[in-house]
Image (cartoon, rainbow, N blue to C red; front, side):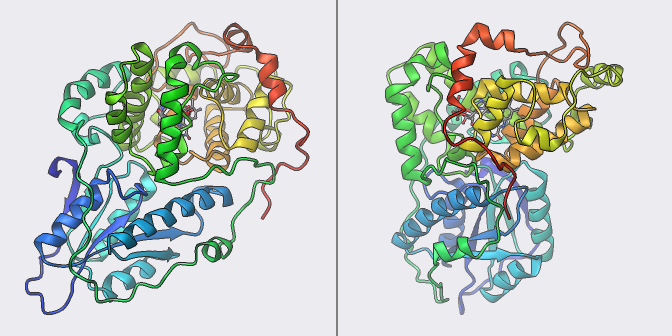
Length: 463
Ligand SMILES: Cc1cc2nc3c(=O)[nH]c(=O)nc-3n(C[C@H](O)[C@H](O)[C@H](O)COP(=O)(O)OP(=O)(O)OC[C@H]3O[C@@H](n4cnc5c(N)ncnc54)[C@H](O)[C@@H]3O)c2cc1C
């Protein structure tokens, strides 16, 4: 467990004596689940050791990195399940609307929170929030990595160059971490504070959130649903994952990314489940490469490179080649709105954008094509980064994730890739075109599947 502690800020001193309650707080942030949650388990261990109750809270931001109503709906549905499970475990669960630091500090002071345990997050916004709270609230503050199977700081102490440099380090350490944790215990010390019940639909309706009128997604959320999605994938799709994972007309991908993103399921649980599955040969290996190596490589990139959302984060060879091709003429140039509304000359690209608007996701293969074309059709790599991040974070259910920032940086800035044959605009950054797509799948079928009767008329977000 201790090895999962990425940082511990022992700023304050532990209070002694139990004349009144000074609970330990698990500040749930990235991992919205009760199972396979090392932060929760660590907080419970501290609480037990100090003979104090454990409480859990989630700070709800009413405006977060382009997230829209559908993201919040999915997230709150998952949290509602968490709250019910906490109720069964007799652990109080709070939602605190976070508009400013004081909202949270008030809660911490009111309940005399003695220690805070929270989830590790590689992204700048969460890290700076943790720093703010840990320096304003003068008590021990622990950060636990439950997102990665091999915690980021143990996997590597530096930014890795590519998958091939991180892969052996991860696999070497995997055996030490491929272990199911215990389940959280029912709390035996009763909490003396009041814990108001949460009206979830009122909570959602009370937030003034952007809506995407094209969205037809609305998948159910939570740990139970995520486990069902995993079962379905293992029974029906895993056996053809390697053969068809680049074909958006075949439904062989797991569809787990929104559940992983919101922490409804842990990738460790997925891997343990796969260990019990009859070896799927290259299918299982290829899937493990994605959910373990590529996913943990993304956190490695975002944790060790603060420029993960911009040009400065690219490797030197890519910066040089993109700079050398800055002034190359562009046959097509599109505004953010053109792209957002899927109004380019390329039906294949438009289909991917429609998929994003309607389903809140783009198939893995098309995601690469989608992003590479944004580099080709905008005035600079900086603008391409800005537009891609904004579109992905606004519309993708799994957006605002280190996988997204890294996937975009891979597509536009050659991150974790190598130099390829030089060409216009891209320089030596890998190029993709529709001929490549045509070799892999029936492009027209994919385009047609994204049309349908509900033709997109008004695609911009409604407020
Ligand atoms: C431009 C671009 C943007 C992307 N944006 C996101 C994003 O916002 N959120 C997101 O989770 N992924 C993103 N990815 C990575 C990948 O496309 C998605 O993880 C995948 O499409 C999710 O679908 P799935 O769960 O069905 O995938 P599966 O193939 O079933 O994979 C299972 C899991 O492995 C992980 N994984 C798969 N591919 C990758 C990858 N290339 N890098 C890192 N982890 C991976 C994901 O956690 C995924 O859920 C992006 C990739 C690109 C090129």
